[in-house]
Every structure is written in C-alpha cells, then in structure tokens.
Image 1 (spheres, rainbow, N blue to C red):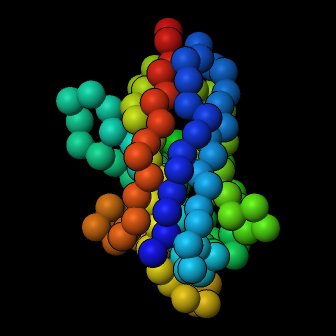
Image 2 (image 1 turned 30 degrees about the horizontal axis):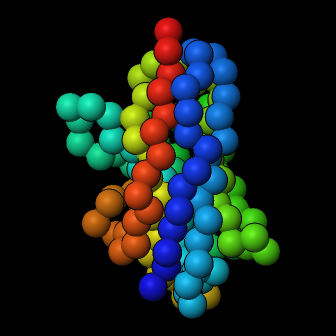
Image 3 (image 1 turned 135 degrees about the vertical axis):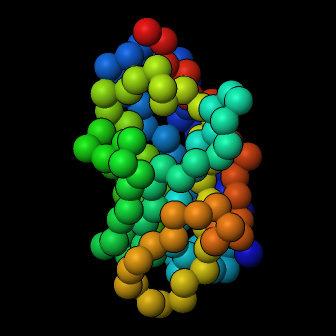
Length: 129
C-alpha cells in the first residue's frame, strides 16, 4: 500500500548529527502513521520514533528522547528523523515503516514493529567514537 525508501545514513563522529529521510508513495501514504526502527548488530529490531499522519502526535523511545526529532512534510510525502548528539550506541540500520490510520489523528501511536505493515529497505548509520 505504501512504498518507502530511506536515505541519509552515513558515517559520523560521536556528538555530530544526521538527518534521515523516508520518501513515501502510494494511495494511503498521507493517511498513514510513520515510524522509525533500528537494528544493531546482534540485537533485535527496536522502536525509535513514530508520528501521526498530521505530524501532531509523536512518540519516542527513551533512549533517543531529547536527541532525536521526527517530523513529516506531507506536501513532499517525506518523513524525517533528525538525529543530534549521536552516540556510538546509535549505530544501526534504520528502517522507516508505515501503518494505515485513516483520518484519525489521535494517540497513542504504536511502538511495536507488528503494527507496521509497510517497510523500507533500511539505511546504515555508523557513529564512531
């Protein structure tokens, strides 16, 4: 239903910033909540952040709260993850994902991977110490 393509990953030093982008397309892209997940080597995929279709409701994992900001620009069909004060622990493959919510723009947002139907292929973020 929604096609997702991530970009913006790369190699940075600890303390620096990156902004990830997720370009969405498809009939229900605008009426979908969007989320970011990440998977580090040897670990399970974990929730990072999510945002409602309007951008008015957001959710963050405790590990990134205060450092990461999720946003979306529906005119461009793009979701962003601004990552500041990056740590080596943030090194992972980052995935964007979507699930359909219709016009409802209320919380709570889902922080579990099983809620998300459509997934991008991921982008690598590496933070060196």
